[in-house]
Length: 259
Image 1 (cartoon, rainbow, N blue to C red):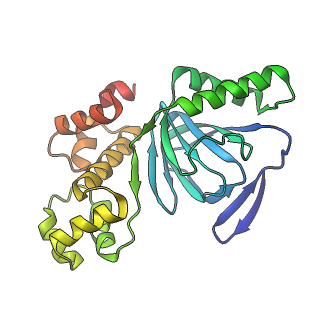
Image 2 (image 1 turned 60 degrees about the horizontal axis):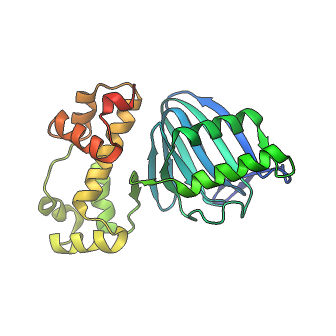
């Protein structure tokens, strides 16, 4: 990769023009942050261990194990590690994955897709001119097109009134004040705030706060926190409420997920 500084981050440009897929295998310590950058290839970022938080201009995505984040080419982003992270990345040549979303998203990683990612990283590059690798590329693309997206996104807010409310919960997810009290801080009525949340991000205030708290809880678990501590520090009234929301979103309990 060739690095160049630009206003919207570091341009991490690929120097390999022949390979359909290039890869990156790297382990990061807890708390490590990759600064704002972007690529000239589409990117599938998978962590076989640890939790990553990906931030772009449009939102924040939390990526736990068994999930990956799809980042289209030219999308500037940062990545922060919660816990020790074993990152395995596939860089896809532009237009190789024509059917995939042109926005960031978190996707489920099946057992097959996981093994394909790890095998691809072991090979380092995949070329269509190599017969067996051409078949492997086709299977990877098929798996990516068939995956299910996961609702682990927190869209960014732009209206100053919403931003004031958002900052309160980002600084302290435990803040339990009802929306009607928070509206005094924002300078808008409860009805206006509810309408603005729906207009800007297609999500209610309650759903937005629920996502924020769940994502914070996942980061704490990845850093080694116990379920009770993660639940209470993330704003849940009881550990059982956190476990219920975790199971509803990810299909299992926090303890089972992070084993």
